Length: 179
Image 1 (cartoon, one colour):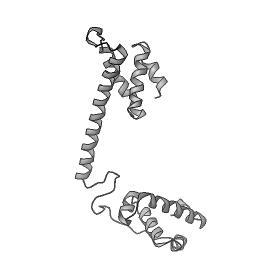
Image 2: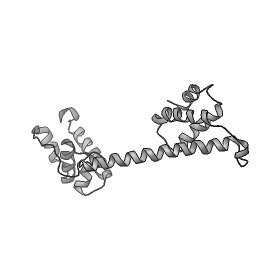
Image 3: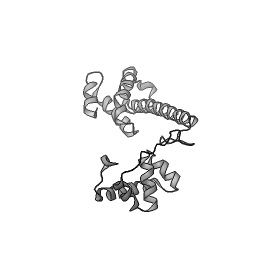
Image 4: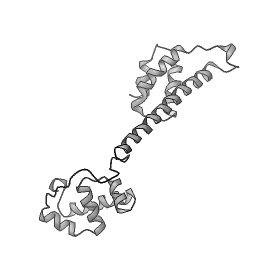
């Protein structure tokens, strides 16, 4: 849902400047666009309950006070989001799983050798040792991040090797369907 759709949803619920202020704070704090509708729903309640009291505002405008209220609410939501994310990462680690989905310990999956066709074996023989290791790892379903750790290099190095391997296989007349 984009900004215009959100503004239309809350048209008439409260002044348009308040909706624009809320959306601008959501965007400025970097929330994912998928979260905007839920955040706006929360903020609509905050905005509707908000009562500006000039006597208690120390000279601040209604917009300045509402800005602070919206910001405080969004920062609270953000803290909860990261707390929950940290708990999830702890849970993954307790199960032996890295953040990227690869396993901390030995892979619990069993390996099955289906054999390779002669054309694939010939194409593999034309690769450097490093590229062969990357190709066999990727074919076995190992993530690029896990391969990089295993091979002692950066993720980007494995990514570049995968692109090189794909070009090599295409040049040999082998596409992904043949593998």
